Length: 141
Image (cartoon, rainbow, N blue to C red; front, side, top):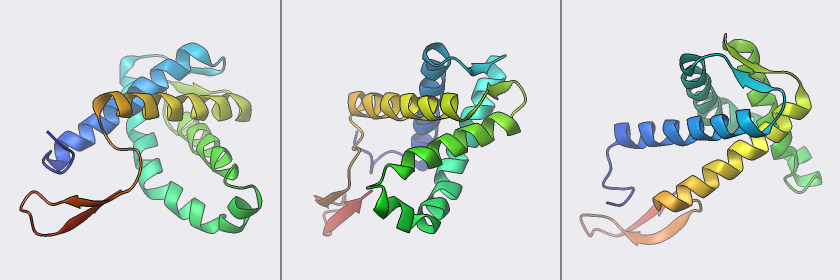
């Protein structure tokens, strides 16, 4: 079953689960990131997912000159800021500072990349795959 044939709800839950696993791993590897309950973990991953989907693109656009100067490394600062913000918004999920947020964001990104590769989800833009109805190419981001 490829990404196109899955329903949007299934893709949403799959992404949420991957993000939850990433936060769970970061909790165990990075001192300064912790959650008090499974509910807090699930809410934190949901809020972080929405921030990644809606806030991160705006921040990337606004900081585009800094991204160019730092060759994209400022992206890690944006990830850290979003994770740190989620830690302050979600009761029961704590991120104790910038550096735990920085390393936690890096761990979450790496776990997400590995899990997505294991699940067969593409991590890059694919151009030229055909649509299920056979009517031309699909640009899959």
